[in-house]
Length: 430
Image (cartoon, rainbow, N blue to C red; front, side, top):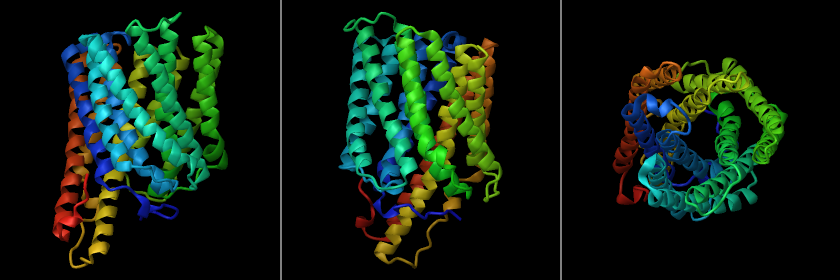
């Protein structure tokens, strides 16, 4: 049984708004996997390879950007009671801009030329701007859980910094700006994107959904109220020190930040082990593997492991796996909730709604997790044994393909039941 106390479910946006983001995201992971199959060992040879940069942005902007944006539009009104103004328009522009931006940036960074790079940067910046402004307004007047509000506000600031640094780097690549050293700015962009935007947003989501879905105790006050602001400060100090050339200061600040994320991961693992809901489902497996990958990435960084190994652990282990696991819970729950709301509105109690647990076939969710885990292991191995790169890409593409099929299945069941409930007015406009 899911504990929905404290959630403003009546303020949720129409289901098709976040669903379009969730349905689009796996397509970019499929492209990243196919790119690895096409390029093979070359892609993992160095993080500076053009195709490696292309694959990274397919995952970060295309996959993670879509999932996190859709989740944010859904979470703000439900969790912190802050509906996003003009949510239909914001959702449409953000979704289209991120899709165009991810494709164009990947093409431009992969060698497609300056025009594609410029279009990608412009479309991405516009999409994030359209999202960030109303989200900031919503957060400013939110009245929900203070800990979640702090984490989401910190994540929003991380997003803004990621976009600003990305535009500076694009300007340098296009010859519009000159940087004394390119690599520190790129490292700062990556730190703000992976840790500031994605990391803090996951933290904000976790402190809500872990107790909600797994019946665990609430996170301690420090984790709920102070961890996100402190991590944000650490990211800021670390990236600034790196840009200024203070390597030791950057390493200390980012090391402290990594320690904070690892502590949160260990705390969450402990809660999941002692959870009240004992059923072992693929969502839980995704949480476990992602948290272990995060801890592994921190250890690899501390031990001076190859940067590509750290990137694989963060991008594939955490960035691809954890959102997939969350979607296994979020999509069926949202579909069931909106169908139930529609049923009450229309008074159609003669029609039995599909149970939330039946919207995703258990066997195929386990297949998806197995393929994801195989892709992660093969990609980690490919850092040291390059011949594993193509099998890793194939496993990655297949895991994303299965995820896409599962999400499409939920959406088909939603529309089928919506039509069965009654009049055309029962269909929510996307």
